[in-house]
Image (cartoon, rainbow, N blue to C red; front, side):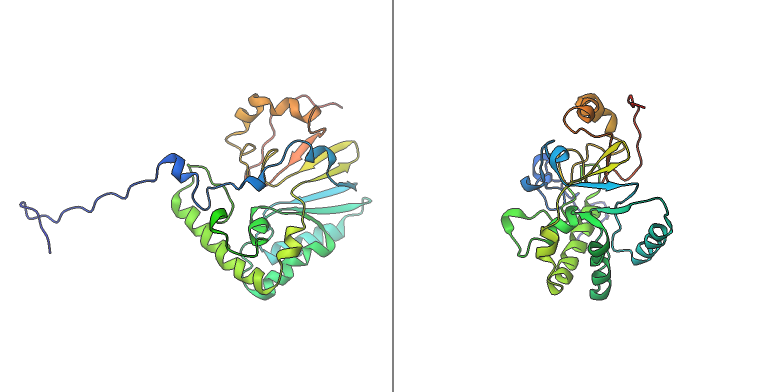
Length: 243
């Protein structure tokens, strides 16, 4: 056992953190270029007409929650009821039977793909496009969380391969639009610019609002509101709403 002159064991050198520019290119933090879209998709995408709209974010393979959602939907009595899964409906459903049960949401609801479905839809490993889980995690998310998410995605990809789910998932759109009475709703997974964007995250929304997001609703997006998932916390910034 190696000891110093004082008799104490030497400390191990601290693990060096990757540089910021290198860190942003690591799997789980890297955002592929094919995640990007422009405001036109929120003006020209498919439109769902509804009297009642459920936008379900982050089902994460939870079949119990899916059963509860079916109960809510079936209890509605107000005209046209539409359900939209706005990405990441797969995640913890690593077992084949559970994966198949979650996949059947596409038979009775609408769906867009989140980063999970997008990465599952890539049939082969491509070293030039290793996005890991595709979460594009910012710097304030610990590396351990990023690595764990990457491992979950790798295991889930094996399940998707056995289920031959690649083609069906890749055919899903990245955005949708809905008309609910007079309200026009843009449905995204990440933000108004990217599939895994964080511009609408609870702690970043004020900055995005000041960066022109407010004017985009009535202008570029032609939407009364955006329904998204990756912000994780509900947000309702103050902006003028037409009655």
